[in-house]
Amino acid sequence: MEKLIVHGGTTLKGSVTISGSKNSSLPILAATLLTKDVCTIRRVPDLSDTNYMTLILAELGAEVERASGVVVVEAKNIKSTAPYELVRKMRASICVLGPLTGRLREAKVSLPGGCVIGDRPVDLHLKGLEGLSAVVTVDGGDIMVDAKAGLKGAVINLMGKHGSTVLGTDNVMMAAVLAEGTTVIEGAAAEPEVEDLANFLIKMGAKIEGAGTSRIVIEGVKELHGAEHTVIPDRIEAGTFLCAGAMMSSGLTLKRVAPEHMKAVLQTLEGCGFPMEIGKDTITIHPNPNAKGFDLTTQVYPGFPTDMQAQFCALACAINDTSTITETIFPQRFMHVAEMKRMGANIDLQGATARIRGVEKLKGAPVMASDLRASAALALAAIKAEGKTDILRLYHIDRGYEHLDDKLSELGADVQRVKE
Ligand code: EPZ
Image (cartoon, rainbow, N blue to C red):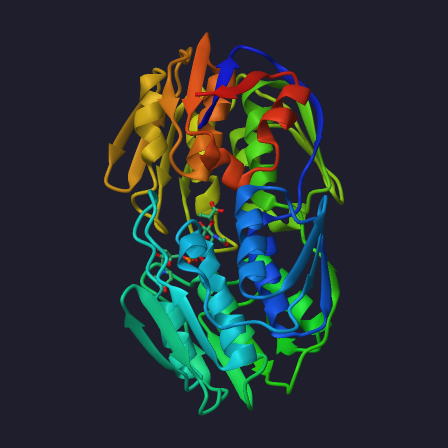
């Protein structure tokens, strides 16, 4: 295991190029299973989650080649069972369920485990596939899908008690593209990553309208052909660096970003009074010693993203005001609070609402990474803090950020990756 040693108090400056989106890459890599032709996916970030996905594709029988950010997949002859020992390591592997069902009319994928941000049910995924006339059973920790009798288009509502489901929408869409007839997904997730997946499927010959809205209409086709695609920029990595720039920089520029995917985050930062210059694919942010606090509630897209919640917790610690954060998507997603309090943060957590009072100084301390976004938030707090911080279990950061420590040190942070 590795840890990150951070000596805080440095001021970041310069520019950072944002990687391709992890949460776009994973379903798009899974979608290559839908054709026997060759697919080329560009700007796939080099991190453990995408590496796991390429391993799963290979285990399923696909030929997979990866050269820096380009992944080439040829899923000519594939089997329908995803390997437990790989699936259990990454719950997003559930997104092979839809393409396997669409291509082979059967699938066997182990139930994904939960994780620290909370229970991660897949009931809506299964409801959606049943809506397409598949027979779904769960036994011995495995999900079995049987659609040998055919996949038939239908009107399916995927809205759950916490709103829409991103990977659930992806799975149903990837099965419906090869179903007979028309499918309407109501209560669909509208995230940019869902739209990016749909754009890739359309390049493969799928007939999809409405992706990026809560109502997606899919006209099933007989088969799909190969395609090439470049994934969209990672809006969560970009948001993470914007927090870094607001907390401790003399001006920080992000390159290769899509500001149009980040409206809720940008509005919140503007509301605090952080000056920003927003270009077509660049954003420059400056600190503001008189920044105001914020009150935010996480929502499904286009609302404030839950994946940015922990990072804004860290930012609130550095604002000389009071801020509140309410988490509605994963109400337990506050593992970072106890760790930040070890660094002297003033956070009062009541249920799913954190009330944060900015402090004069955070103090370095050994802290434990938990989920990937919480870990990135701890890195931000550590750079802001006075003294030394050891962030243990660095693999959490490596799951979702491409070379985060290298990018931070290039901006002037004093960070060092060492064996624990
Ligand atoms: C995606 O996860 C992202 N992961 C998550 O990012 C992100 O936090 C989440 O969407 C919400 O935006 C990827 O895209 C790989 P959901 P997903 O299904 O699709 C409930 C990160 O940090 N729900 O949209 O698994 C669920 O419990 C990761 O990069 C059901 O009730 O999340 C949650 O409360 C973490 N039944 C809410 O819906 C279901 O069948 C949203 O979950 C499915 C979900």
